[in-house]
Amino acid sequence: MSLKTAKGNAMGQLDGKTALVTGGTSGIGLATAHRFAAEGAHVFITGRDQGRLDAAVKEVPNATGITSDVSNPEDLDRLAAAIGDHGKGLDAVFVNAGGGEFATLDSVGWQDYQQTFNTNVGGVIFTVQKVLPLLNPGAAIVLTGSTSAGNGQPAFGLYAASKAAIRSLGRTWAGELVSRGVRVNTIVPGATETPGLGGLAPDNPQGLFQQLASQIPMGRLARPEEIANVALFLVSEQSSFMTGAEVFVDGGAEQI
Image 1 (cartoon, rainbow, N blue to C red):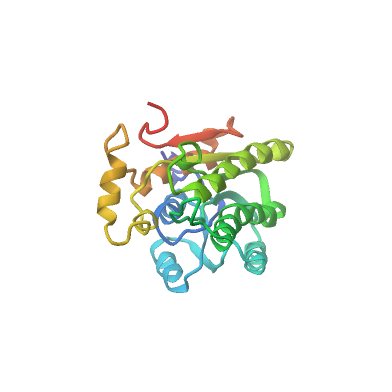
Image 2: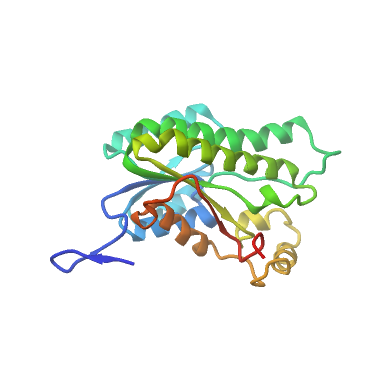
């Protein structure tokens, strides 16, 4: 919903704001970057692949792309410096970068553990830590959780555990930052039709999508844009009395 100024011009919910979307080159991240930009924000987008990042920046109006691996401290330093140089701080932070692979308990290795937790947990912790000095009064942080954190899906233990950590961090940070006027909430997408999800079954992504859709009360996967709409709500003034919350966008999968 857009407002009108006294002169009748459309004004977006994030007009004049600056936002960061990590993992913004595809799927939920890219859809959210589009949504924030459509509401008037200047959006910093991160991704590891330069080609995909360049393509995303061409798609998203008023966007700046920064190549960054959230598990690399030097990349996070560069990211914070670039946003600082922009000179307007940060009003909205969508901490979305992450991923996982199938691996059963008897097959998982130390490298699997390090890769998943360095990205999904360490990347979240240190992304937020690096941008803390840049947060403007009233800023909002949204962390990306997962329904996997609570459903015990076989062969997805590392990913699920990393996302359970995110839920805990979101609560703690909401308490730590409330005195600064900074809100922290966790969005919990259900199965969403994205390249990342399809990559878990590269030989038959549609088969995986159909299998997951059959487990959802609404009978389908989410569209990335549907998750982006809720992310916008959580960084906008529409959710001004919400912090420490966990918001499920899962077609009823964990609710019914």
